[in-house]
Figure (cartoon, rainbow, N blue to C red):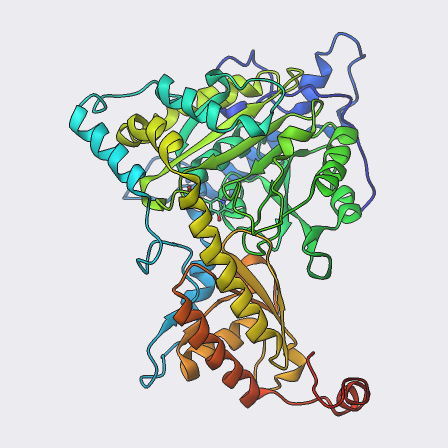
Length: 492
Ligand SMILES: *Cc1c(COP(=O)(O)O)cnc(C)c1O
């Protein structure tokens, strides 16, 4: 695809469907360029034809004429909202082996096995908020001031040289709602957002229903899951509304260094593209790995950073997340107001946790976080070392977050069609359940979670190895070539 860059500078306007103060413009980015005093009105070649889209939708889906009976229909949004993981998992024909207890390495909820608990400080803070009875009412739509102040302080690393104001913080119902708000604040239907592949499938779920296109940039397994920057850049066109990055990342456990992040920033700077940074795993890095907030590396490119309590404080059910706006040169224009307008739709996250937030963020000791990282790192090492030895598997050692991706050389498993089939049969024979990489747009990988108790990792690795040994068939040619090199022990 040719690169056609029609953006003339950072002149953002929030998406039209959310912007009540828009003065009758269609809300596409082209019209915002057209109102620039410095440049003559551009041609319409990069205009999203919203009217055409509307006409097509109307023709396709909206019943006309007087009703003569019940014609209730679900909305376009409802019909186009899909959970990819559920779709694939429900298609599996699974019957766990009754002789082996089930080991689910698929569940993204770290609290489920009871080995990882919220800190005492976190629990006490909430009890205090309940007992004080001061947090039963509505908060402002962006959240309580004290909570936003606390988040601003807690997030100081995101721009160490300039204080974050509580006005730059919006509290949301989990990081999911933060991501939704950012995507909807920046992109209109017909526009596109660049997201990682493999990547968290919520991005697609959120965008698709709004008719916002998702374009995948590839993460490269043999380069520690760094992004293919050339391919990333080639995806950008005049309708690209944002680059979404996820660092540290799910499902790969990738963590990017400052150099790689700066290269992404360079691309965004050249194409006048804001960044949505999903940093729900901030600080979640293994020993000797550094986490760098992408917002700390640029003054030029606006960054909306999404975070929350969910993963680091191990309370996914509490639905507490946030967006932090980093826009040093006011390039987001009214998209910032758009973001704030969007808060009015559901009035934020629950107020009990907001009341507890200042204590949660300040009082949870570093030793608590260190303990969680230690457990994850030791599980990662154990699984990596065990699975590295298994013929046909290629685990990629993660640098952070809670997951590991394992490549499958599917050509060596002639009885297994693909990653989905591999996962299904591993449940049926060994009662070990991983998620197929296809759930993350990454076929021929599987993802395991590292938050389970160590004994489960150990036992599951034994079973995975047994499963692979049973189904592995050598490719004779490859076997001969490698066996001369590797003295008979072949690890593909
Ligand atoms: C878990 C997760 C989220 C969502 O977090 P919630 O706060 O539960 O909404 C967002 N992004 C990624 C990459 C995640 O893994």
